[in-house]
Length: 266
Image (cartoon, rainbow, N blue to C red; front, side, top):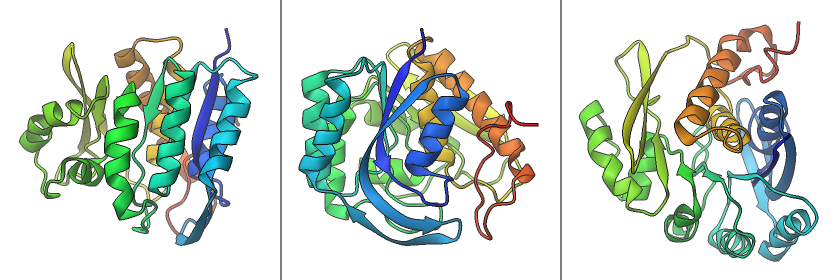
């Protein structure tokens, strides 16, 4: 069975992140990609110029249109922009009850530009996290979700896992890429069965635009066919390949995109 995956997120006209990265990722992993857009973003590899959030009712219309016609095997959530959109998306997910929901709590772009209104954090924390199969925060995002300082060590990552899981998701994938001082990046997958450390070698490249979008979309594409730990392992392997091959692309002057089709293109 070819899985149908719906991504609900913002756009990236340069193609490296957001809806565009999600659809590339889902397609590369053999699933059928669908999308509902929350915000139209003017950005490129150098930064975000601005964005226009869509009307919450229209975001909900897009989501309902898909669910009313198509079997949805997994949902990936990315940029939500503001609290009213979060409420609308949460209502749709509650109504349609998809089996798998992967939440990438997008708050800040790679360039440092903010993509979520500060007052929307509480809505994301209380409405979307409890509806999620897995939440995939990086360390700055985890600090915001917990209302904690962004001062991380390996021990602090492990200590934060129970509090993150208590927010209501089934699993948490806490990404350690922002932790400095190691040749490895270690992500921690935590759920009721316990905690699994998932290390990967760091790759020396500036082509890291859209890494969070790509990883969460890959997990969503794989969850319909694999249990959580195996889906995350395979998603990380795909991300590592896309990062390793990113220098084959020549796109932009800033943080370039990953090579989503590294295994398919000569």
